[in-house]
Length: 225
Ligand code: SAM
Image (cartoon, rainbow, N blue to C red; front, side):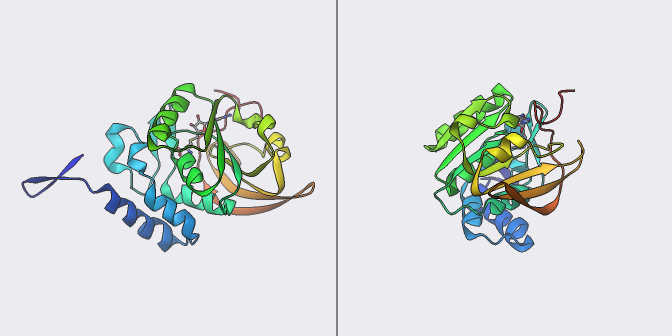
């Protein structure tokens, strides 16, 4: 991509924009996990957005990715990831692959990522981008992620990147002891981001922040409209 400075056309410096995003949108707003900051300073977000939005990739907002879906705002990706408290050895289930950007961040920080997307064209596009970037530790599935991926559980972390009316019991049951589940729940057009931590059959619940996500559509989410 080129941008104009005076009369000259210069290549756009995505790395510089990415590092400014990390400083201004993440560190300054309280994201403190150095591994999360490092991963978000490394993963080329501009490769995950539609061509028309490439030059907006590092802006402080969600962007359309086609099929009526969005890639989340960088800050939301960071706070959700930080909430999982990944150390590097975890198996993580992600529901809502979307563009694959959040998947890449998780793949930088954990041992194995399993990701489910209900719209097959998005799965295929994400698979291609993540394959080209060379991530060896991601498994993809197309289908209803509100049911989880029981054959592959339990998971040390589960992240749901779409808004659900309630926490699906299927996902709670697939969480490992001490594991964390991060999920936006609430009404269809505005939710609260929660973290649930499993202690035996008890789930400690924390309210992280208000948020707005596209709906989780499926058996344990919303009905398709
Ligand atoms: N994390 C993604 C990224 O980095 O681009 C953004 C995800 S977008 C906010 C939410 C995604 O969840 C959409 O792609 C949508 O199709 C998907 N989705 C909604 N309901 C789903 C379900 N039941 N199972 C799997 N994916 C679902």
